[in-house]
Amino acid sequence: MGYDLVNVGDKDLMMGLKFLYGLSQKAKFPFISANLIEKGNQKTIFKPHVIKEILGLKVGIIGLMDDQFSPGIQEQEAGVTVLEPLSTSKAVIKRLREYCDLIVVLSQLGASKDRKLARQNPEIDLILGGGGEATRAILERVNEVPIYRLEPRGGYLGRIDYSLVDVKRPIKFVVISERDEIEKRLERLITRSIQIKSEIAKSGEKDAMKAKELKFLESKRQELERSLSAFQDKNFYRHRSIPVQLSVKDDPCILKAVENYRAESAKLYRPTVGALPEKDLSEKEMLARIPKESPYVGAISCKGCHIANYHNWLKTKHAKASQTIIATPKYAQEECLVCHSTGYGKIGEYATVEEIPFYLRGVQCEACHGAGKGHPAKGEVQKKVTLGICRNCHTKDQSPTFNYLAYLEKIGCKISK
Image 1 (cartoon, one colour):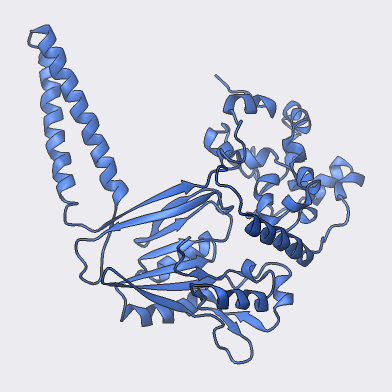
Image 2: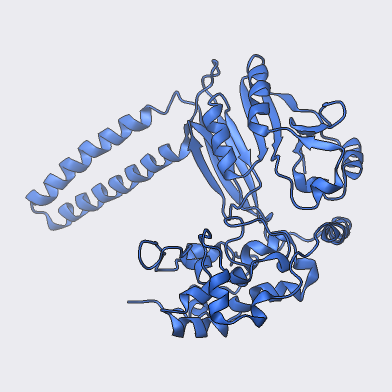
Protein backbone atom coordinates (compact mmCIF):
# COMPACT_ATOMS: atom_id res chain seq x y z
CA MET A 1 0.00 0.00 0.00
CA GLY A 2 3.03 2.27 -0.06
CA TYR A 3 3.19 3.19 3.63
CA ASP A 4 6.02 5.47 4.73
CA LEU A 5 5.53 4.91 8.46
CA VAL A 6 2.90 4.09 11.07
CA ASN A 7 2.10 5.78 14.38
CA VAL A 8 1.56 3.37 17.28
CA GLY A 9 -1.73 3.71 19.16
CA ASP A 10 -2.78 1.96 22.36
CA LYS A 11 -4.97 -0.53 20.45
CA ASP A 12 -1.85 -1.70 18.61
CA LEU A 13 -0.67 -3.14 21.92
CA MET A 14 -3.76 -5.37 22.08
CA MET A 15 -1.74 -8.47 21.13
CA GLY A 16 1.17 -7.50 23.36
CA LEU A 17 4.29 -5.38 22.89
CA LYS A 18 6.42 -8.39 21.97
CA PHE A 19 4.08 -9.20 19.08
CA LEU A 20 3.98 -5.58 17.91
CA TYR A 21 7.74 -5.14 18.16
CA GLY A 22 8.22 -8.33 16.14
CA LEU A 23 5.98 -6.91 13.40
CA SER A 24 7.95 -3.66 13.40
CA GLN A 25 11.14 -5.59 12.67
CA LYS A 26 9.54 -7.28 9.65
CA ALA A 27 7.90 -4.15 8.26
CA LYS A 28 9.50 -2.23 5.39
CA PHE A 29 8.56 1.07 7.04
CA PRO A 30 9.27 2.43 10.55
CA PHE A 31 6.88 2.42 13.52
CA ILE A 32 7.03 5.69 15.49
CA SER A 33 5.94 6.90 18.92
CA ALA A 34 7.46 9.85 20.79
CA ASN A 35 5.87 9.06 24.14
CA LEU A 36 5.70 5.25 24.45
CA ILE A 37 8.67 4.30 26.63
CA GLU A 38 10.14 1.44 28.64
CA LYS A 39 9.57 1.89 32.35
CA GLY A 40 13.04 0.76 33.38
CA ASN A 41 15.34 2.92 31.28
CA GLN A 42 12.90 5.62 30.07
CA LYS A 43 13.92 5.00 26.45
CA THR A 44 11.46 5.19 23.59
CA ILE A 45 10.54 1.74 22.25
CA PHE A 46 10.11 2.95 18.67
CA LYS A 47 11.59 5.93 16.85
CA PRO A 48 10.03 9.15 18.24
CA HIS A 49 10.00 10.75 14.79
CA VAL A 50 11.18 10.41 11.21
CA ILE A 51 12.53 13.10 8.84
CA LYS A 52 11.66 12.44 5.20
CA GLU A 53 12.99 14.44 2.27
CA ILE A 54 10.32 15.03 -0.37
CA LEU A 55 11.12 17.11 -3.48
CA GLY A 56 13.89 18.91 -1.62
CA LEU A 57 11.78 19.65 1.47
CA LYS A 58 12.50 18.09 4.85
CA VAL A 59 9.30 16.88 6.53
CA GLY A 60 9.46 15.93 10.22
CA ILE A 61 6.80 13.41 11.25
CA ILE A 62 6.08 12.80 14.94
CA GLY A 63 3.95 10.03 16.47
CA LEU A 64 1.88 10.59 19.62
CA MET A 65 -0.46 8.28 21.52
CA ASP A 66 -2.83 9.07 24.36
CA ASP A 67 -1.64 8.37 27.88
CA GLN A 68 -5.07 7.00 28.80
CA PHE A 69 -4.84 3.32 27.89
CA SER A 70 -7.89 1.28 26.96
CA PRO A 71 -9.15 -1.16 29.62
CA GLY A 72 -7.05 -4.31 29.88
CA ILE A 73 -4.02 -3.05 27.96
CA GLN A 74 -2.42 -1.19 30.88
CA GLU A 75 -2.53 -4.32 33.04
CA GLN A 76 -1.09 -6.44 30.22
CA GLU A 77 1.78 -4.12 29.39
CA ALA A 78 3.23 -3.47 32.85
CA GLY A 79 6.72 -2.89 31.41
CA VAL A 80 5.78 0.17 29.37
CA THR A 81 4.43 3.58 30.15
CA VAL A 82 3.15 6.52 28.12
CA LEU A 83 4.47 10.02 28.82
CA GLU A 84 2.03 12.92 28.89
CA PRO A 85 1.75 13.66 25.15
CA LEU A 86 1.36 17.45 25.09
CA SER A 87 4.42 18.25 27.17
CA THR A 88 6.47 15.53 25.42
CA SER A 89 5.62 16.90 21.99
CA LYS A 90 6.85 20.43 22.78
CA ALA A 91 10.49 19.37 23.11
CA VAL A 92 10.38 17.14 20.02
CA ILE A 93 8.71 19.83 17.87
CA LYS A 94 11.21 22.48 18.98
CA ARG A 95 14.11 20.17 18.06
CA LEU A 96 12.64 19.29 14.66
CA ARG A 97 11.84 22.89 13.78
CA GLU A 98 15.57 23.60 13.46
CA TYR A 99 16.00 21.06 10.66
CA CYS A 100 12.58 20.69 9.01
CA ASP A 101 10.57 22.76 6.55
CA LEU A 102 7.31 21.12 7.60
CA ILE A 103 6.16 19.32 10.74
CA VAL A 104 3.39 16.71 10.67
CA VAL A 105 1.97 15.09 13.82
CA LEU A 106 0.33 11.67 13.62
CA SER A 107 -1.95 11.72 16.64
CA GLN A 108 -3.96 9.12 18.53
CA LEU A 109 -5.04 11.66 21.14
CA GLY A 110 -8.67 12.31 20.16
CA ALA A 111 -10.29 15.53 18.95
CA SER A 112 -10.15 17.64 22.13
CA LYS A 113 -6.45 16.93 22.80
CA ASP A 114 -5.61 17.52 19.13
CA ARG A 115 -7.11 21.00 19.47
CA LYS A 116 -5.12 21.63 22.64
CA LEU A 117 -1.96 20.42 20.88
CA ALA A 118 -2.59 22.90 18.05
CA ARG A 119 -3.19 25.79 20.48
CA GLN A 120 0.06 25.07 22.30
CA ASN A 121 2.17 24.46 19.16
CA PRO A 122 1.34 26.89 16.32
CA GLU A 123 4.52 25.81 14.49
CA ILE A 124 2.90 22.44 13.58
CA ASP A 125 1.93 22.37 9.89
CA LEU A 126 -0.55 19.48 10.02
CA ILE A 127 -2.13 17.16 12.58
CA LEU A 128 -3.52 13.88 11.25
CA GLY A 129 -5.82 12.81 14.05
CA GLY A 130 -7.12 9.43 15.15
CA GLY A 131 -8.70 8.03 18.30
CA GLY A 132 -11.65 9.48 20.16
CA GLU A 133 -15.25 9.65 19.06
CA ALA A 134 -15.25 11.23 15.59
CA THR A 135 -18.07 9.92 13.41
CA ARG A 136 -17.25 11.71 10.16
CA ALA A 137 -14.32 13.11 8.25
CA ILE A 138 -13.56 16.69 9.19
CA LEU A 139 -10.87 19.31 8.60
CA GLU A 140 -10.69 22.15 11.10
CA ARG A 141 -8.13 24.85 11.76
CA VAL A 142 -7.13 25.66 15.33
CA ASN A 143 -4.60 28.44 15.86
CA GLU A 144 -4.07 28.26 12.05
CA VAL A 145 -2.99 24.61 12.42
CA PRO A 146 -5.04 22.26 10.19
CA ILE A 147 -6.36 19.13 11.94
CA TYR A 148 -7.66 16.39 9.67
CA ARG A 149 -9.67 13.54 11.17
CA LEU A 150 -11.33 10.62 9.42
CA GLU A 151 -14.38 8.55 10.29
CA PRO A 152 -12.83 5.99 12.67
CA ARG A 153 -14.03 2.61 11.40
CA GLY A 154 -11.86 2.30 8.33
CA GLY A 155 -14.52 3.39 5.85
CA TYR A 156 -12.38 6.12 4.29
CA LEU A 157 -8.85 6.91 3.26
CA GLY A 158 -7.75 10.51 3.60
CA ARG A 159 -5.74 12.47 1.06
CA ILE A 160 -4.17 15.92 1.29
CA ASP A 161 -2.48 17.49 -1.75
CA TYR A 162 -0.06 20.38 -1.32
CA SER A 163 0.89 23.00 -3.90
CA LEU A 164 3.96 25.04 -3.01
CA VAL A 165 5.16 28.22 -4.67
CA ASP A 166 7.03 29.90 -1.82
CA VAL A 167 9.21 27.53 0.27
CA LYS A 168 10.87 30.19 2.39
CA ARG A 169 10.58 29.29 6.09
CA PRO A 170 8.20 29.38 7.81
CA ILE A 171 6.06 27.98 4.98
CA LYS A 172 2.52 29.34 5.10
CA PHE A 173 -0.60 27.88 3.49
CA VAL A 174 -4.13 28.79 2.55
CA VAL A 175 -6.95 26.24 2.37
CA ILE A 176 -7.91 25.53 -1.23
CA SER A 177 -11.60 25.38 -0.28
CA GLU A 178 -11.50 29.18 0.14
CA ARG A 179 -10.38 29.57 -3.47
CA ASP A 180 -12.84 26.90 -4.66
CA GLU A 181 -15.72 28.81 -3.10
CA ILE A 182 -14.73 32.04 -4.90
CA GLU A 183 -14.45 30.13 -8.20
CA LYS A 184 -17.93 28.65 -7.74
CA ARG A 185 -19.40 32.07 -7.02
CA LEU A 186 -17.66 33.49 -10.08
CA GLU A 187 -18.99 30.68 -12.26
CA ARG A 188 -22.57 31.25 -11.06
CA LEU A 189 -22.22 34.98 -11.64
CA ILE A 190 -20.91 34.52 -15.21
CA THR A 191 -23.71 32.05 -15.99
CA ARG A 192 -26.30 34.58 -14.79
CA SER A 193 -24.72 37.36 -16.88
CA ILE A 194 -24.86 35.20 -20.02
CA GLN A 195 -28.50 34.36 -19.29
CA ILE A 196 -29.46 38.05 -18.94
CA LYS A 197 -27.62 39.02 -22.15
CA SER A 198 -29.42 36.22 -23.99
CA GLU A 199 -32.82 37.42 -22.70
CA ILE A 200 -32.06 41.02 -23.78
CA ALA A 201 -30.95 39.84 -27.23
CA LYS A 202 -34.13 37.78 -27.71
CA SER A 203 -36.47 40.59 -26.70
CA GLY A 204 -34.61 43.20 -28.78
CA GLU A 205 -35.70 45.86 -26.30
CA LYS A 206 -33.85 47.78 -23.63
CA ASP A 207 -34.64 46.65 -20.10
CA ALA A 208 -33.50 49.09 -17.41
CA MET A 209 -33.75 46.53 -14.59
CA LYS A 210 -31.73 43.90 -16.46
CA ALA A 211 -29.15 46.48 -17.50
CA LYS A 212 -28.79 47.50 -13.87
CA GLU A 213 -28.37 43.88 -12.80
CA LEU A 214 -25.73 43.33 -15.49
CA LYS A 215 -23.77 46.35 -14.26
CA PHE A 216 -23.92 45.02 -10.69
CA LEU A 217 -22.81 41.52 -11.81
CA GLU A 218 -19.88 43.02 -13.74
CA SER A 219 -18.64 44.89 -10.65
CA LYS A 220 -18.95 41.71 -8.54
CA ARG A 221 -17.10 39.72 -11.23
CA GLN A 222 -14.16 42.14 -11.10
CA GLU A 223 -14.15 41.97 -7.30
CA LEU A 224 -14.06 38.15 -7.31
CA GLU A 225 -11.32 38.05 -9.95
CA ARG A 226 -9.20 40.36 -7.79
CA SER A 227 -9.75 37.99 -4.85
CA LEU A 228 -8.69 35.02 -6.99
CA SER A 229 -5.52 36.77 -8.17
CA ALA A 230 -4.43 37.04 -4.52
CA PHE A 231 -4.13 33.22 -4.44
CA GLN A 232 -1.73 32.98 -7.39
CA ASP A 233 1.46 33.27 -5.36
CA LYS A 234 0.17 31.39 -2.31
CA ASN A 235 0.89 27.88 -1.06
CA PHE A 236 -2.29 25.89 -0.65
CA TYR A 237 -3.60 22.43 0.23
CA ARG A 238 -6.69 20.48 -0.73
CA HIS A 239 -8.12 17.62 1.34
CA ARG A 240 -10.62 14.91 0.49
CA SER A 241 -11.97 11.62 1.81
CA ILE A 242 -11.91 8.52 -0.38
CA PRO A 243 -14.53 5.87 0.49
CA VAL A 244 -13.37 2.26 0.71
CA GLN A 245 -16.13 0.43 -1.17
CA LEU A 246 -17.31 -3.11 -0.47
CA SER A 247 -16.20 -3.89 -4.02
CA VAL A 248 -12.66 -3.99 -2.58
CA LYS A 249 -12.36 -7.72 -1.85
CA ASP A 250 -10.99 -9.05 1.44
CA ASP A 251 -7.52 -10.54 1.39
CA PRO A 252 -7.79 -14.07 2.91
CA CYS A 253 -4.52 -13.77 4.89
CA ILE A 254 -5.44 -10.37 6.32
CA LEU A 255 -8.97 -11.56 7.08
CA LYS A 256 -7.57 -14.48 9.07
CA ALA A 257 -5.29 -12.11 11.00
CA VAL A 258 -8.25 -9.80 11.77
CA GLU A 259 -10.34 -12.71 13.09
CA ASN A 260 -7.43 -13.77 15.29
CA TYR A 261 -7.13 -10.18 16.55
CA ARG A 262 -10.84 -10.11 17.41
CA ALA A 263 -10.60 -13.35 19.37
CA GLU A 264 -7.49 -12.29 21.29
CA SER A 265 -8.65 -8.73 22.00
CA ALA A 266 -11.98 -10.02 23.34
CA LYS A 267 -10.06 -11.82 26.10
CA LEU A 268 -8.79 -8.48 27.43
CA TYR A 269 -12.28 -7.21 28.15
CA ARG A 270 -14.05 -8.61 31.16
CA PRO A 271 -17.75 -7.75 31.41
CA THR A 272 -18.35 -5.55 34.44
CA VAL A 273 -22.11 -6.06 34.32
CA GLY A 274 -23.33 -9.64 34.54
CA ALA A 275 -27.00 -9.10 33.76
CA LEU A 276 -29.18 -6.36 32.39
CA PRO A 277 -29.95 -4.32 35.52
CA GLU A 278 -33.23 -2.93 34.19
CA LYS A 279 -34.90 -6.35 34.10
CA ASP A 280 -35.79 -6.32 37.76
CA LEU A 281 -36.27 -2.57 38.22
CA SER A 282 -39.44 -0.55 38.14
CA GLU A 283 -39.60 2.48 35.87
CA LYS A 284 -39.25 4.76 38.89
CA GLU A 285 -36.13 2.90 40.04
CA MET A 286 -34.59 3.08 36.55
CA LEU A 287 -35.09 6.84 36.42
CA ALA A 288 -33.52 7.17 39.87
CA ARG A 289 -30.42 5.24 38.75
CA ILE A 290 -29.59 7.47 35.79
CA PRO A 291 -26.59 9.56 36.99
CA LYS A 292 -27.53 13.20 37.61
CA GLU A 293 -24.33 14.42 35.95
CA SER A 294 -24.99 12.45 32.76
CA PRO A 295 -25.77 14.59 29.67
CA TYR A 296 -27.79 11.62 28.37
CA VAL A 297 -31.00 10.73 30.16
CA GLY A 298 -32.21 7.69 28.19
CA ALA A 299 -35.41 6.94 26.29
CA ILE A 300 -37.12 6.03 29.56
CA SER A 301 -36.91 9.72 30.52
CA CYS A 302 -38.34 10.82 27.14
CA LYS A 303 -41.31 8.50 27.67
CA GLY A 304 -42.91 10.92 30.15
CA CYS A 305 -43.87 13.37 27.38
CA HIS A 306 -43.52 11.22 24.26
CA ILE A 307 -45.26 8.01 25.24
CA ALA A 308 -46.53 7.15 21.72
CA ASN A 309 -43.06 7.69 20.21
CA TYR A 310 -41.52 5.61 22.97
CA HIS A 311 -43.81 2.62 22.34
CA ASN A 312 -43.24 2.92 18.58
CA TRP A 313 -39.49 2.93 19.20
CA LEU A 314 -39.67 -0.26 21.32
CA LYS A 315 -40.91 -2.14 18.24
CA THR A 316 -37.99 -1.02 16.04
CA LYS A 317 -34.58 -2.52 15.29
CA HIS A 318 -33.03 0.61 16.82
CA ALA A 319 -34.29 -0.47 20.24
CA LYS A 320 -32.59 -3.86 19.85
CA ALA A 321 -29.37 -2.60 18.25
CA SER A 322 -27.13 -3.55 21.20
CA GLN A 323 -28.61 -7.06 21.43
CA THR A 324 -27.97 -7.50 17.70
CA ILE A 325 -24.21 -7.50 18.19
CA ILE A 326 -24.44 -9.71 21.28
CA ALA A 327 -25.85 -12.36 18.96
CA THR A 328 -22.92 -11.87 16.56
CA PRO A 329 -19.76 -12.04 18.73
CA LYS A 330 -17.28 -11.26 15.97
CA TYR A 331 -18.97 -7.87 15.50
CA ALA A 332 -19.36 -7.16 19.21
CA GLN A 333 -16.20 -5.08 19.25
CA GLU A 334 -15.58 -1.55 20.37
CA GLU A 335 -15.87 -0.05 16.88
CA CYS A 336 -19.42 -1.43 16.58
CA LEU A 337 -20.60 0.30 19.75
CA VAL A 338 -20.51 3.73 18.09
CA CYS A 339 -23.63 2.87 16.10
CA HIS A 340 -25.18 0.15 18.28
CA SER A 341 -25.53 2.20 21.46
CA THR A 342 -26.25 5.79 22.50
CA GLY A 343 -23.67 8.36 23.62
CA TYR A 344 -20.59 6.24 22.97
CA GLY A 345 -17.44 8.34 23.35
CA LYS A 346 -19.34 11.24 24.88
CA ILE A 347 -20.24 9.72 28.24
CA GLY A 348 -17.88 6.82 28.80
CA GLU A 349 -15.49 4.53 26.99
CA TYR A 350 -17.22 1.20 27.52
CA ALA A 351 -15.54 -1.55 25.55
CA THR A 352 -18.15 -4.33 25.37
CA VAL A 353 -21.91 -4.58 25.03
CA GLU A 354 -22.15 -5.80 28.62
CA GLU A 355 -20.56 -2.57 29.88
CA ILE A 356 -23.08 -0.23 28.22
CA PRO A 357 -25.08 1.56 30.94
CA PHE A 358 -28.66 0.26 30.92
CA TYR A 359 -30.12 3.62 29.92
CA LEU A 360 -27.87 3.86 26.82
CA ARG A 361 -28.56 0.45 25.26
CA GLY A 362 -29.73 0.47 21.68
CA VAL A 363 -30.12 3.45 19.36
CA GLN A 364 -32.31 5.68 21.51
CA CYS A 365 -33.90 9.10 21.02
CA GLU A 366 -30.72 10.98 21.98
CA ALA A 367 -28.59 9.17 19.36
CA CYS A 368 -30.45 11.20 16.73
CA HIS A 369 -31.82 14.22 18.63
CA GLY A 370 -28.81 14.95 20.85
CA ALA A 371 -28.25 14.79 24.61
CA GLY A 372 -31.46 15.50 26.52
CA LYS A 373 -30.24 16.80 29.87
CA GLY A 374 -32.25 19.88 30.85
CA HIS A 375 -34.93 19.29 28.22
CA PRO A 376 -37.63 20.59 28.02
CA ALA A 377 -36.73 23.46 30.39
CA LYS A 378 -33.28 24.70 29.35
CA GLY A 379 -31.95 21.77 27.36
CA GLU A 380 -31.69 21.90 23.59
CA VAL A 381 -32.46 18.94 21.36
CA GLN A 382 -32.39 18.73 17.59
CA LYS A 383 -36.01 18.39 16.46
CA LYS A 384 -35.39 17.42 12.86
CA VAL A 385 -33.35 14.29 12.17
CA THR A 386 -31.42 15.16 9.02
CA LEU A 387 -30.04 12.82 6.39
CA GLY A 388 -26.53 13.71 7.58
CA ILE A 389 -27.27 12.39 11.08
CA CYS A 390 -28.54 9.09 9.69
CA ARG A 391 -25.57 8.77 7.33
CA ASN A 392 -23.13 8.76 10.27
CA CYS A 393 -24.05 5.09 10.70
CA HIS A 394 -26.11 4.22 7.62
CA THR A 395 -23.15 4.55 5.28
CA LYS A 396 -23.42 3.45 1.66
CA ASP A 397 -21.34 0.37 2.42
CA GLN A 398 -22.88 -0.63 5.75
CA SER A 399 -26.45 0.18 4.71
CA PRO A 400 -26.66 -0.01 0.89
CA THR A 401 -30.49 -0.10 0.81
CA PHE A 402 -30.86 2.96 3.04
CA ASN A 403 -33.68 5.30 2.06
CA TYR A 404 -34.06 8.38 4.25
CA LEU A 405 -37.85 8.79 4.21
CA ALA A 406 -38.61 5.06 4.31
CA TYR A 407 -36.24 4.45 7.22
CA LEU A 408 -37.69 7.36 9.20
CA GLU A 409 -41.10 5.69 8.91
CA LYS A 410 -39.59 2.40 10.12
CA ILE A 411 -38.38 3.96 13.36
CA GLY A 412 -41.68 5.72 14.03
CA CYS A 413 -40.62 9.19 12.89
CA LYS A 414 -42.58 11.26 10.42
CA ILE A 415 -41.50 14.26 8.38
CA SER A 416 -43.41 17.31 9.61
CA LYS A 417 -44.67 19.51 6.79
